[in-house]
Length: 285
Image (tube, rainbow, N blue to C red; front, side, top):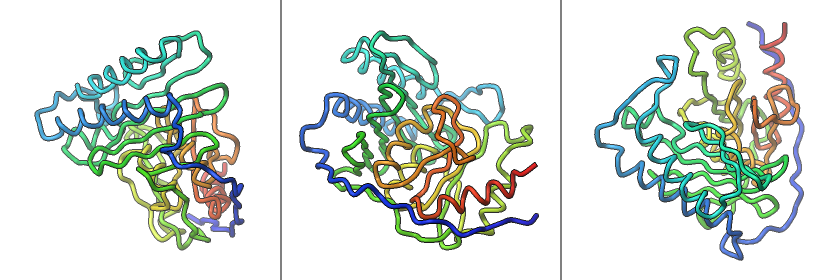
């Protein structure tokens, strides 16, 4: 397989000044942070206990009773404060609202890790207000890391402002990705793309939590992320996080992300066009 690893372009941030997350937090951000922390602590407290595991279709698509418990906690708290907002949650689906706003929730991203006792998972809560996401929260209870982004106010890890990496080229970058749950039967399963990026980059990782992958791009731990097929709750909070940290987010074709049917490339901006070029070379007819 021949892979094109073309040169990229430098992406420049807006240079805007943002405030500390502690200065006048919005009600939405404060409730989202408190709710994500409560759900994460619930999950962490049961990590080493016995877990009831079932499957959603494919034998690799796990769900535990803790997904439902964490989701109920989140929805109940959001409903108590924002009763008119719609909700889209991974386990219960869509619930309508009257406000024109929508909360997008993943109560436990990294369920397979969780089911096996691997401490790499997170809670993700985002608020979509109109066409875009205005608040995004990702909480890792294992490291007690709270990633928070608010449109126009930057991205933060606990009390430290986030910024994407300065890695200038794809061949010196560290990437991350994920695979579809139906990888055993799906032809478009990201294996060819994964092989290509392993040859074009410093390395490509798969840790099993898209929301943490995106938070890690925002914090500069990873330089880029791609995935061929995701769900709204996988990208809503993390996509905003990357943008507010100075990065770039598109679909795998370079077009704007459709949050209801997302494919995704997220990067520090500097290597974004190179990632898109590799995807084009691998996926060409």
